[in-house]
Amino acid sequence: MKDNLINALNGKDCEKTPVTAFPSVLTTELLSKANTNFNEACHDAEKMAEVAGLVYEYTQLEGITVPLDLWFESESVGHFFKRQEGSLAPVISKSPFDMPEDVELPDDFINLGQFPVIEKAVEIIHERYDDKDVPIIGEITSAFTLLTDLVDLGKIIKMLNSDYFDIEDALEEINSKLVEEVKFYQDIGVDCIVVNDPSSTTNIVKPNLFVDLIQPYLVELSDSMDVPGVLHICGDTNPNIENMLSCGYEGLSISQEVDISYTREIKEKIGSKTAICGNLAIGETLLMKNEEQIKEESAKCLDKMVDVLGPGCNIAYETPLNNIKAMVDARDEYFEKIEQ
Image (cartoon, rainbow, N blue to C red; front, side):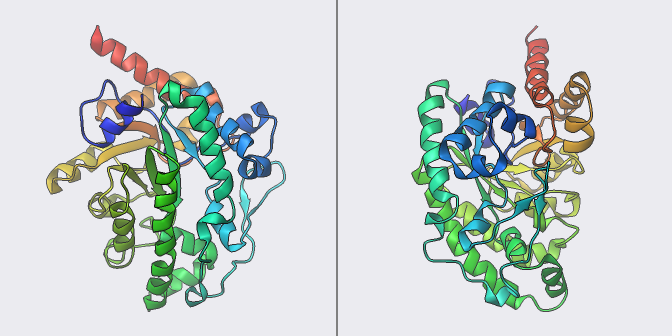
């Protein structure tokens, strides 16, 4: 299973198309099955490992991704996101820094917040799943997206349209710590690293600005990796696909708004070796449709020769686990027909 995913990301022959979710999976059903809550699952290593492992146990997704909280790095600078009552949706409180030039991350960034919990959780996951050959995927927030967690997004957008030199200084400060985070994950033995960069979607960052401001830091991260890396950017990124494919990652995770065939055309045009990952709709398909309909949508992705099948973004909190498993079942049925 592990080799199958790594081979797919490295452009090598694989037994069958892997199915996994690169942004981590956390649902209310998972928390219920683990008899825990969001806070405990993010701050207790045993519970983090249990919930992350249950994703594999109940859905057979071919990868265990940690941590479970997309905003976990913010805790290392003392910024906590509360959750709405009865929901896992974050409540955005006051940003910890007023302006980008104020941003300063602690020297011991990777020893603070959830990092010690993640290290212990991965140790537990290794003990439980190494004999099952399940790949472990570490999750990093990109420099630009982390900046928009630390400074009000509205201020950042205004600066993008005028003078972004102060933003550049902040990105350099943040990225230096993210390079350390890459080493942290490699030291604890992950098999792959996904870099989540939702704030770099084309609605916020236009392609020319992406190349000038965002891409250099994404490239620096990918260059620092000794394990395969996957870049995930949400939304309609069609105008920016060529630039995203040029960031040096082994995989590119795309949303449902981006056509797999179009992405493959661009990939072939520029001679990119990046694997295409995704891109089932997380709302209208995985959350709202039934299992048979999800299988049909999964088969369409496979027909378009997606390299790694999975959701187009982080899965909605209320998504039934059986709906997630339907992607794996669809892949199995698809390849059974080919072999007949």
